[in-house]
Length: 187
Image 1 (tube, rainbow, N blue to C red):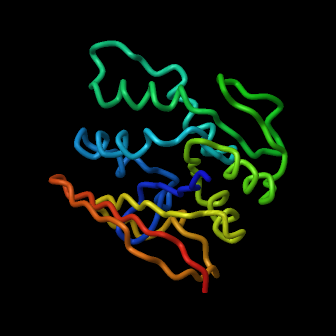
Image 2 (cartoon, rainbow, N blue to C red; image 1 turned 90 degrees about the vertical axis):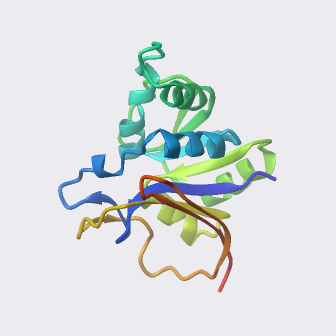
């Protein structure tokens, strides 16, 4: 059975976007990006909400030109090879390959997808991940902590959800990022 992972870059104070909706402060350097690539190799399907999908669409047309760093080209290839499921009531159709639109988030359908997938699934976007965590679907949380405090914005984790965590892995990067990987448990 595949795992469902929630993996995001967030500030030390727990935000994936600052108060102005910006997230460039969390841009990973090459060392962090290579680590992300190594972790994402096992992902066969990405689950996105509409806003995260619109952000990630960049990678569909990103350059694979030799002028781009090799870690960026590698990420582009990994992302393009994976399937994408986008949960949106407003999108009419998908504008990128290997993508299907679902009108509502159905926890039972995601459970079935986990059971039948040979590769891991990844959920991204705070709101969608919050629904998946509340439904008990998320197996692991991977938090890439950017060395910044932004003070306000969109929270990394949902409010009013309690879960025991088991620390599985940590990694410290030379540029100040820290990686934490937890298994979610039940209360």
